[in-house]
Length: 132
Image (cartoon, rainbow, N blue to C red):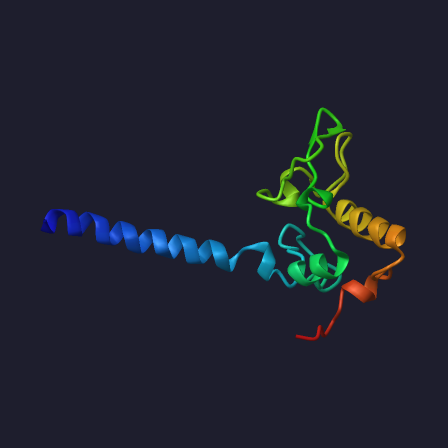
């Protein structure tokens, strides 16, 4: 019986640790856009409270923002939410995908313009002193 405890107890602890670490990095807790891919960001990270934004905007379909393209065509009802934006969007635009900065700005601003809601100017998202 002790042999099993030496194996299962550490496995159970690791499993619980992995679960809580994953929960710590989930998008629901997101408060700012990750700018870790940019070597020298010129502005503060864009404030983006993921869950609050989606509730206020009435968004339930993740693929609206977390889109997926194959062979240059949008795949309907498929989501890329388990990937980083930089997995498909390089820093610089390519023939197949807009650059990361352009992708963020195009997605967000085009939706805000279409809906006639939300921030449109740089300083409205990139806040130097965001409120908690």
